[in-house]
Amino acid sequence: MIVDDDQGLLFSIRTALLSAGLPDPVLVSDSRQVGALVRSHCFQLVLLDLIMPHLDGMEVLKQIKQESPATECIIVTAVDEVAMAVQAMRFGAYDYLVKPLNLERTTIAIGHALERYQLRQGMALFERPQKFEDLKFPDKFEEMVARDESMALVFHQAEICAQSDYNVMITGETGVGKGMLARIIHKISARCKGPFVAVNMPAFSHPLFEDDIFGHIRGAYTGAVSDKRGFFETAQGGTLFLDEITELAPAMQGKLLRVIEEKEFYRLGSTQVVHVDLRILSASNRNLSEAMASGCLRRDLYFRLNEYHIHIPELRRRPKDIPVLADYFMKVHALKNNKRLKQISRELQQALQQYDFPGNVRELENIVASGVLLETTDTLRLESVQNLLPPVRAAHSRDEKHFTSLDELQRRHIIQALQITDGNRTHAARLLGIGLRTLQRKLKAMDI
Image (tube, rainbow, N blue to C red; front, side, top):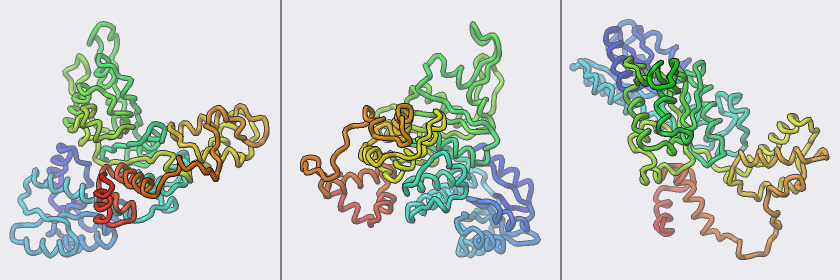
């Protein structure tokens, strides 16, 4: 939100922000409206003039910080009010700018403040356990069944990033639900009334890429008998989901990057520019650092797409989710196949808990669906899925060869925390519940 009684300045700042690819701000010329707006909306940043009629900027700043302490505030002041700006920073302002405003400097300051807000929100999530009961839109997550605390964190991250217009990168193994989470983010975003267009990037071949992404006009090439809208036009006003982005050829990634940066493109055969108004969500099942190092993902494209990052843990890391997901899928597929299944046997539950699910949630659903088809009783039994699961291990096996030491378990847990946090040691330490120095000592001792 930008608050200033000079409407000309408001529109100048808005134009500069949109040109820089930043979110479209709310413009307010009457400072008396700010309090109600802050109470009813979740603002990440307020750019606030200090000298205004009706209610001066200092009072407005106090209102904002009282209603929403997490909201970042940048103060705008005249040259001779720098001392007042410093006082405002003591009240919680993040930065101050001096009139006449340099629009480039203003845009940079706003970008930094938005990044700071996102960083602080992300760190806050890692600092405390997240609960499903605290979700603002729990009904939007109903189809993504989960009970494990790690998924509560994922859902809260989805709610936070949905309220912004940032491009989001979702990572996780195949079958964890990246596409489903992308749809949920779209549903709870400001673009929910616009289209959601999902694109499977590995399906593109080089000759078809520009045609499918950007479209063409009639006569652009032999066989182009009519105009065609590409995925960018189809998703206008909504969300474009690029699934498995790392599988797109680097040359085509460059064409994609140009559109994201310039927010415009041309249909094949056309000289008329088409402006882009959409949000991009991306997903990958690969380690992004390794993908960039190997040249599978352009670094400049990565930074454009990864304004916010969510990692979905593997199903084997979410033991509490396995029984509830199995029960959910049993009911869904029993209804589809007119089967009256009431429960899952204890033996099958045990076998599912011991399996590592390389295909994650998608594989679990396939196993349960197959079992439902074969089951002839009112209980889903191990016998119905025994060909899809490895033999059940004895609960009290004495085979020492398969016993994992505490040191090895600790090593694996630390590596998992580093993977979830993209190598950020500070975040990983919080996730593990230890101090940063303790983590550093363990990393050195374990040669990680």
